Amino acid sequence: MKRSLWTNALLLAVVAALGLIVYFRPKSGAPVEYALSALKPAEARSLRIEREGAPAIALERRQDAWFLVAPLAARADEFAVERLLAIVQAKAAYRFPATDLARFDLERPQARLVVEGQSFAFGIVSEVAREQYVLTGDAVYAVNPRYGMALPATAAAMVSRRLFAPGEAPVRIETKELAVAQRDGRWIVTPAEEGLSQDDLNRWVDDWRLASALRVEPHTKGKAQAEIRISLKESGTLSLAVLSREPELVLLRPDEKLQYHFSAATAKRLLSPPGAGARSAPAGKK
Image (cartoon, rainbow, N blue to C red; front, side, top):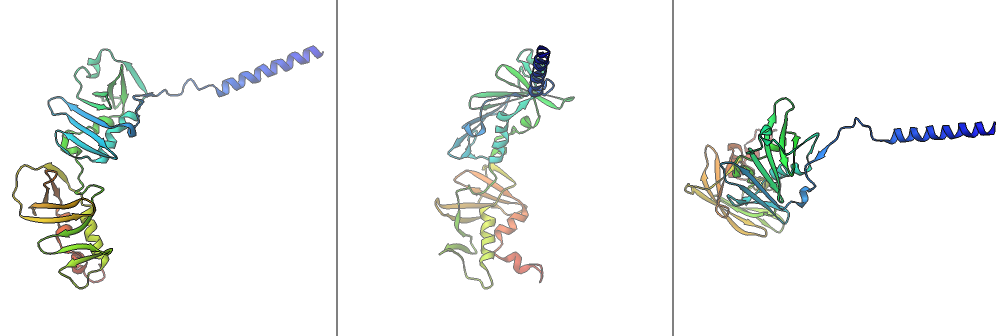
């Protein structure tokens, strides 16, 4: 009798152990994901975009900022760089051996992105699965097409549209008509104008400091119609050339050899005197 009880207890223990193993074992139906890279975005210091028939676009990180170094020199759009770097964190549900590349349109890739020496070649987009085939290392991965869509068609598309770099803080803005300068923590306008508040001046200076262009292009030609002198907190003085006022405002930064194209609405805010919008607004709608 005792032997039977011991046998039953042993069987129950075995069944319980098997149950725990089955419960904690990874489900065989769980989707498998394949990482394309072991790199981390923060580790990247160099990027290169190659398209057949076009000059290669090269970028490098200096301290905490990205810059284009070829085919032109400029500050890079940080958001555009982040979109490019997302490929190193991409994961794919399907992975294929890097053989018979023609069926993936990867014998002569449409484009290639090189991050810290690791190459990502972009092939055809599957119309059925809506996935793009990417060759890296010794395998082809099927990934979301957004990674390929992040590749710029031209170097100009990677240029920052901000007129001033993050570390450039205007402390004096001088046009032909007026000058606004910071003095003892306050903004002073010359010639003096009654009715202007510090809020009016702060808004006007912020419009300049945060000005973002519709597009940025290398300067090729254009005669300056006027000059705007900007004194920066820690970077000396900068002269901007006004190349055009209508139908859009075009400002040239000679130090960068780039011209910034602004919308008519932005042009009005930048070129109008501080507080002009508030003074011209109907009563009760300031």
